[in-house]
Image (tube, rainbow, N blue to C red):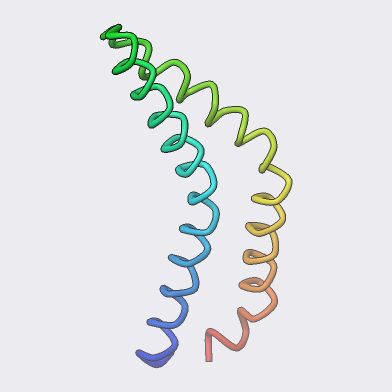
Length: 89
């Protein structure tokens, strides 16, 4: 294993992690902004009002995106296992 291989492998892993997390984080950010605007407009400063909609929205996005996330993760894992003999050399 060369240092270039290790760096490339780590980069590929980080890119996969970010691509999987980005849609869920984006949904949470969008819902958070909408809730903040509603709170500012109505002057309701309830602490649970910020967390509950975000949790529900991220959970819903996870349910919708789960097949895509699973496909990405299984493909990456399959690639690792198929190329394992080459990694060992």
